[in-house]
Image 1 (cartoon, helix red, strand yellow):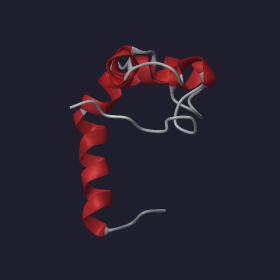
Image 2 (cartoon, one colour):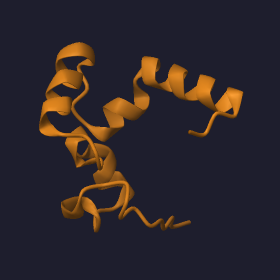
Image 3 (cartoon, one colour):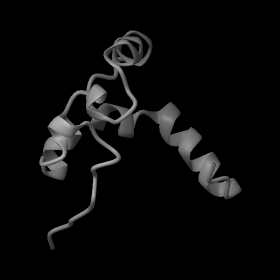
Image 4 (cartoon, one colour):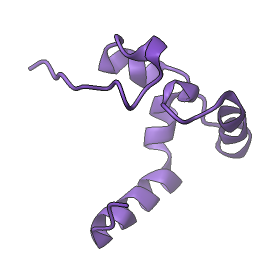
Length: 74
C-alpha cells in the first residue's frame, strides 16, 4: 500500500519530491532545521550520516520513546 504524506515542513526543498525510501537514504542535513554543521557533529559523535541512521540510532530512539511515553509533545 503506498504511503503519502506532506513532507514540505519536514525536509529541505530539494528533498520534498523524494520517496520515503529516498529520504531514508538522504543525508541527515536533508531534514529541515539540520545544518551541514549539525550533520558533521552527528557524524563525529554518533556515526550518523543519513536520515535512516538517525532514525535507527538507539540513543535517539530511546529519547523519542521516553518523550512519547510522557505524552510531552512540545
